[in-house]
Structures are given as structure tokens and as C-alpha cells.
Length: 167
Image 1 (cartoon, rainbow, N blue to C red):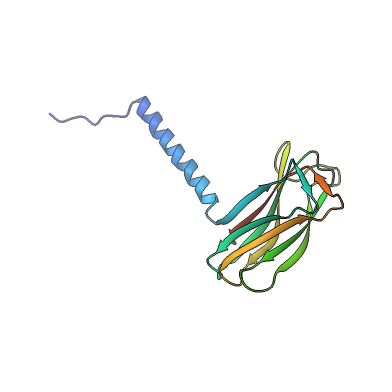
Image 2 (cartoon, rainbow, N blue to C red):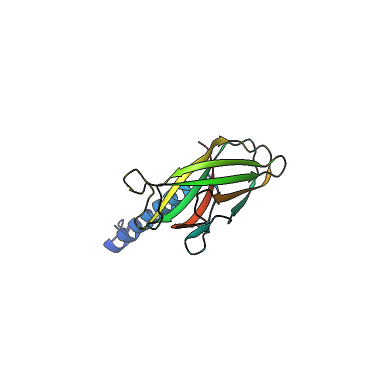
């Protein structure tokens, strides 16, 4: 007597669907971060960025032939009083001169609507360099200072640096 092929019951179908959904979610989550080389945030002291406070981000570059996108990220709350944020940043390579630049980050439109993602905490990203090839392998460090007129800039909760492979 041969065994008839058994069909899965409702519980087995549900487990199979759950397993497939979990695998799909994992695939989506991990594939999105595939090109990210570095992604870190620094919390400001009590959501206030002091004028003389510089925040540093240090990371390794192992492949100088790959182009990278370098992004400054900021998380602000509703207490931030301005439409924009000026930042001064320095890039300290493992060898060679230090590079400095100034960037304006527009956080809100002319009507005061925040351009970042979020509800009471808004996250915005600003490209510092696109398709950039680091000149040498090694440890790099970026430093950021706020360039606004306030000695104590309220409403900035965190700043971040994101390095990802271009393309």
C-alpha cells in the first residue's frame, strides 16, 4: 500500500508563509545597507550644539579605487529656530594636507515646514562629496562644528556621518 501525498494543514501553511515573509524582510533590510561603509551619530549635549564643540567621526578606508558618497546627517527637533544650518568641516586623511569646507544645510522651507523625515524629530542628509575616491588607504577623520551666530544652538539633537559606496 502506498502512502498518499499529504497536503500541509493550515498551521503548516501559516508557518511557511511566516518563514518566507521573515526571509524577505531580512533580505530587504540587509541589501539596503550593503554599500554602507560607515554610519555613526553623535548626540549633542542636551540638544544644544555649542559653538566651540567639534564632533569627530573616524573610519577606515580599505579600497581607494572605489568611489564613495559622503553625507552629513542631522537630527533636529521643533525647537531649532532657523531654516538652515551652516557647518564647518575638516577632513583629516592618513597622509597629506587637512581639507576644510563650509556647507549650508537647508532644514526647512520658507514657510517653516521641516524638510527632513520624521514627526517631532526630523532627520536630514546632505551630500558633502559624491563619487569621491579617497586618495590613500587608511584611517580618516571628519570633524564638524556649527557655523551659526549662536554660541548655543538649540534643537540639534544628533549629527552624523554616512559613507557609502557610490552607484
